[in-house]
Image (cartoon, rainbow, N blue to C red; front, side, top):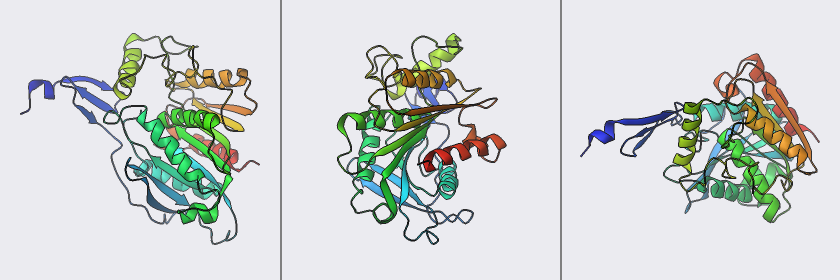
Length: 320
């Protein structure tokens, strides 16, 4: 039987999830699903695969039109969607559209990972799922069960990327791959972190000091990671005291994208500075898009700034 507490809203967090006094939660967006297939605008084909049926890990694969590239081996991009660890999926219209466009322009194979969502599956579940998916992709370095990867993929040119929470995941899988390796001939060439979801106890730079906004950020984090040590948990703050450090990232180059009007902008800047100072031997680049907010490229993909963002990401994936 429903109670008053079931209907009474406790807090709504950044228009993505609503939490009730009873503890019940409601996702407010990101639950639409579009079918896989051939996109008529780009010629990109997509299909859905199950990576681990026991854990419930799946993915949507994207393959560009290879009719003019019959013998080419293509870079492989493992992509992690955003949504605060609690909404969205690779099967939604916004991520399917984004990856259709990216795959067509960059001529890469993309594996968009469907990791399990919090709060039903609290963190670190998403990290475990995401690393398992990366290892599954890497297992195709010398062939494998998935024909698109085995026949067309060059796992010596493997990239990880994501936006928001997905960028947080991309960082952590690159870090974990640096510790344990991928166990095959696969090698991560680059990581592209788009508007990364990092935070911390104390403000950095010009980051907001507004108490209500910071409390909402903490409540969202505690919702998705109830076992957290707080806002300086190294999962959300990779620069916190006691964090593993950035020197061991298993990639040759990193692109950090930030947006000028994004609440998370200062954290992306701090991550870039920390990476440069860490002793990591790769190439780091940061680009800030002024006058735009969080994941603007998904909200308004036809805008001039979104198209410029897309060109940078394509260039990053195609650079030798």
